[in-house]
Length: 184
Length: 317
Ligand SMILES: Nc1ncnc2c1ncn2[C@@H]1O[C@H](COP(=O)(O)OP(=O)(O)O)[C@@H](O)[C@H]1O
Ligand SMILES: [Mg+2]
Image (cartoon, rainbow over all chains, first blue to last red; front, side, top):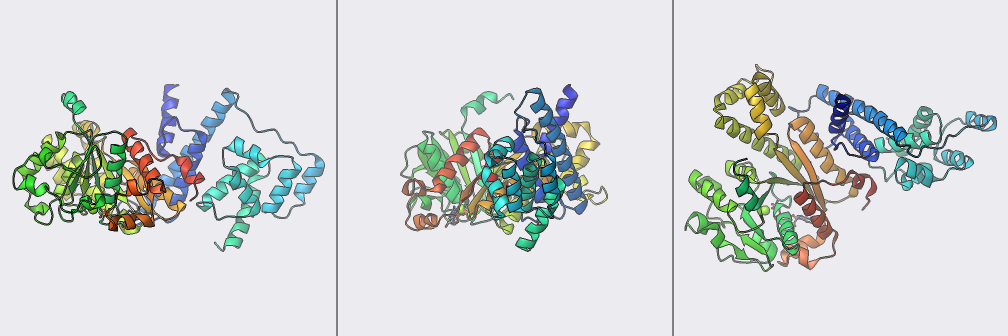
């Protein structure tokens, strides 16, 4: 027991958090660190002695690992304390067909799907603890308020997961469209 | 441990440095001092920028009656040259105007200076440091209970800050190991760093720790508390708020020391207006964002807390 508790402390430490951090702290920190070490930042420029490529990759690996371990940690804790789960969504055949007919996921379509399922944005927001506005903006394809691409991707993943959609397909379609629209 | 009783009585010392000039060290010092005083704390500010002393100007004090010159040259005690800067509970030791540069301060004088700082009659002593990594500047920085750096969202400022803190860390490590008779080992290792595959401070520390149990325990006892508090000043957009977190991360993951992101202060045109009119900012624009941010930042510093991560993602300017 004590050794596994220590491991989690180490994962919190990698994400630069105290061990009493909430899951949304964990996610925010993960998204930030991932953006920081996979892109360019004035915080990482001009320290070549300390920042060789290999070390950077190493750190990114540690961050990924810590995050996935902590996701597991919070899921387990949520189950134990009987936390509010996301509603089980089952699609009937008609709906499956409707989804299968989609060629590509974009903001307005996601909104349509969500409304058909009778899910409110505020439900997703309170379950994921991400501000409702971000989901609104995903549906409206208004990207200016996302501090970095990884946040958009991170929130979209939560959104699609909540709706029980095929997360990787939704994310890849949507992000392609995002790059097209923003020229990135 | 054994001087625990003295520590309880003596003032808490904060030093504000960070390498580059013009980032707002003096402005931030003046504001934090004003905030703490208005919260009922007894505060003394020391202008230790011996090259470009101007902290008094932020309070509209034009010609200081006494300055550090009187301490270094006329042998007055530090307590006797604290002047009134027009704000209750806030005292000021003004810098030496031009006549002194830190090269001229002898070792004994420096020790006396530090001794006097510790015995100042105040709860908080905040020291405003000059730019650069001069030995005296670094020693004064290390003296503090809280080592605070002020940066702006600009590559050169961040670069200078890293450089400054790395130098301070190196100096402190050298002093600590010297005290344990290990200075030669330290210097020898650093001199031959290439043959040991040492590229940076982190490598140096790991190498020394691996090589000896003594070094490891010395390090754990005396260096593990080395921590800087980061203040990000002159923000122009909410996206920059996260930069403080990024810089903190680099300090911890790559440079090898603890860091906290204590707070940020946005850029406001009224700051310059106030300075030019010689008005104390905190009292002239009490409802500005800057005043609120200084309050949050100072509270974080007192409690050893940080900007909350929720602020990065949720807050929009
Ligand atoms: N938050 C701020 N908003 C606007 N201007 C600022 C702010 N902080 C500092 N400045 C400007 O930067 C200048 C330099 O500040 P100063 O405190 O003298 O820097 P330092 O002591 O680091 O050399 C000030 O004169 C002021 O005009
Ligand atoms: Mg200054």
